Length: 339
Ligand SMILES: NC(=O)c1ccc[n+]([C@@H]2O[C@H](COP(=O)([O-])OP(=O)(O)OC[C@H]3O[C@@H](n4cnc5c(N)ncnc54)[C@H](O)[C@@H]3O)[C@@H](O)[C@H]2O)c1
Image 1: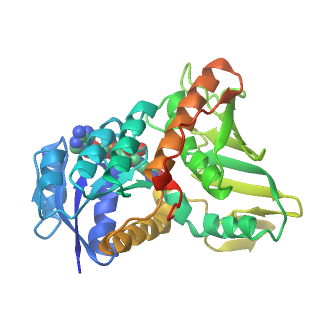
Image 2: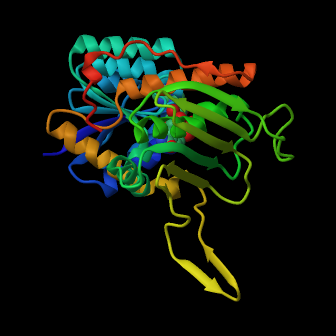
Image 3: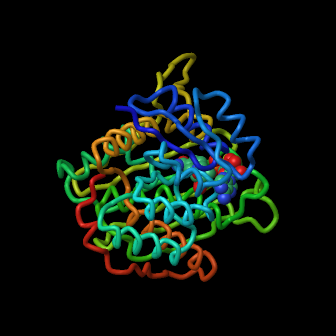
């Protein structure tokens, strides 16, 4: 059986997902696309066999030939399309963020709970990365004792001019926030944001790097160095410190070369290179689950909790204080997360 997917938003990641859905993964085809830029949507459809181009996201969701929906448009538009997919009873994969505000995420949770079944999966692909999965297996396996701390770094080589200090939290650190919740199977209790010496490569008025401290309810502390003008490459680091040992992501996914007194390996150029297999694994799991009549992966609750932690991070960035993360009560629908 082939799952017919419709893609809303054919920009950078939308095109990358269309490529993997149409050329890399199995049991799926891209049946329809749409974008507010119709030429862009048409250009993407031209490279696909028999894909329809819709005038807007609602028309795509209403298309009886679309079994499930992928939302890869700008963050502020996600709420509208996720709610429309829930109303149509169609499974939806939404790139992060689930929605850009706590209130919008609340409305999605309410709609999904009213529907009585999980219809939403959120694109936190690090949960599908082999290294992060191996790290979580060690932490939860208990072989090096209880976790105490996690050190993380999220270093982007550079960012476009429209990027702001707030986006370091909302667009970069959001992945580390999701990793922390997933790694320790716990919610974040509080956030602090420290502002180190500003990089000379940062624009005027831009706090870069940031040091984000996440305090889990268990007491585990997670420090995230978030830096978006690192220059040299896309460098993702993580180390969990436990009572009897440590576990860390490896330095290089490829080969290591030793020569003339040096030891070197490749650092990925960007997030696409670093997480290409994680995106493939994430989508294949979602396709298989949706074809079987359900869903899998990070839930709308995970999307909600990440957005609330980011909102709290922005308050902490402004206040310089420890800010509590206040979540609503988790609906029973999310008690057994299938990720
Ligand atoms: N998981 C990840 O690591 C990751 C990486 C990159 C982007 N993203 C997320 O994916 C989303 C898209 O990011 P991007 O980098 O591809 O952005 P982009 O600007 O390259 O593409 C977004 C596309 O959405 C279209 N669009 C905007 N409003 C629309 C609407 N109302 N209906 C239909 N189309 C609309 C735009 O015209 C554009 O083509 C964002 O939410 C971003 O945070 C996630």
